[in-house]
Length: 314
Image (tube, rainbow, N blue to C red; front, side, top):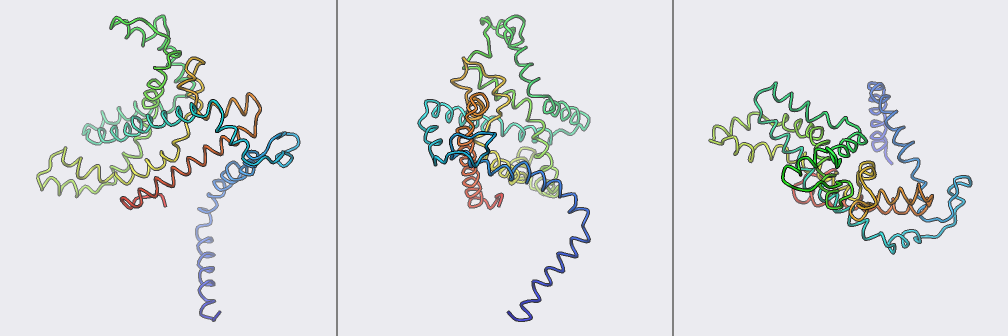
């Protein structure tokens, strides 16, 4: 290697050293972030070895288990619950994407059209508040509203001449109640991202559209939506990367034995297998399978988006 070739890495090293010294406090603030992800996310990943073992014991440790290869995965694929778990998980995710994903976008677009600032602030505050309510409290509210005697939902049914029902034991009601309550709780908070994207649209584009004779609706179609489309695509890619995941806490609190047929998802099954039955290796295999599918969806969605419109995560 020539002296000229050696000068490049030395120059980069000097630049890096100067950058670290100049912004040392900024980089110091990143240390807890890196420590958190390393300790709680990357560090425990060696526990995935349990997915390929049998006979794990918390006392003996992970490396004391018997290696069985893909037996745990095969057992899960051949189990009676496999089809039901996959179907319920995908169906709930599909409904969440179809109905839940557009909700904050529509809310942000509507708020963007409001000209009365005081009214806009009130609506934003009211729509944000449900996000800060605990899931346990939300399910408790749903349970109170679903009561046979005096529950709001049954009072509404009685107004239309319908008999009261026990909503939490009706399999046909579980999915709509789950999706609608998620929209109520999360749409306002999720709209913040899209409101920020709307604020970043150049106002000169709207002026140019007005000069060309575009009304509010044409401005929405040709300026506003294209302006936030990259943000929408990125958020959709991230959502597709969690298509096999679900809100375990809420589903677990809402489900009853009579609704298992439509509410039992991979997360709740892993809880029963891993925590209640102490079958740690089997539940680890199921969790690993779930993560691999999510990662695959994320990569495919990102590749399609990059090829279609040059917007992607990487």
